[in-house]
Image: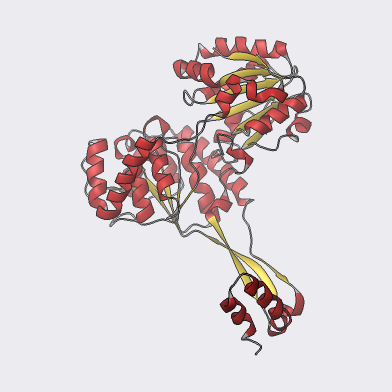
Length: 431
């Protein structure tokens, strides 16, 4: 099921299984890109008519421009079906997420330099954001919270939700989250055509500044194609977790955490990196025992066979070096001194420190965002946050005295680049 590997970190390129894991990415095949490009072009040209045609074709549902938008009454009625205890848990999670993200707010600032010159930065929220909520088994209410709450905290004026119509009525929890967050502009359109509508605008759906939210390969391809006309969050790849542990860690905890990510999909990656061969063997035994009790057993077994590994290294320093090479979405640290070990990890979407910080608390409840970089992109990118919904504008207030002092230098630099009009714009003010 899951392989045990003794690894020399100086020869990573020779570890076939590890290279297979490192080779996972959110690549999109050419056939999908070609089909999606045609859909995006069609929606751009025909607007609502194209959306309604694709809804019949892909969802076997006939809508009109009026019924394409879910009414507030429909959302409220669906939300009322959810168990009150589940609503209570959801509200607490929402409060935690909001509290955490409020700490990310950035304020305007200004400094004064020579001769009365004042420079600064003005922070303003995006005006309108599109949130894609997938249907089927990928319709995670928690992801709606993680995408919408940072935008609300940032002060985004308008959040437009799109979601496939065929599954919307089957998932009252999504409606409950929308109600709790007061998101009532919901359009029953899914797939690449929904992304295209958000990017270019139609008669019914407004053009947005940014599109966030997960989806299938067609949604991902559409987001990639429209990027530039609008901003996007990312092209998310399969989920992944790396646990760093020594012989002080509990194997049943580690196994449970590995399985929590392996159940996402057959291409999810679940990896233990440890200095203890005894722990690796015990974790493998626990994985077998616990997998047999889980409803998504077949998915887990495929995931662990292809992209799971229990890796034995010589030292915790080597373990951290390997984590930094993998740059995974989630890292858990369970060692004698978890804080010291975690301090050596530079590349990770989120780090969970200690035996009582399972990745699951980040998925649902702690307040940190679970929209994280995958596929090694934690080398250069970060969790979704308030800052993703803010624009930074530079502010310059020069004075006559400072321009007189610096115009000659500005002129030299401009002329060195061949831009005499640039130079003239500075020197004309003192001639």
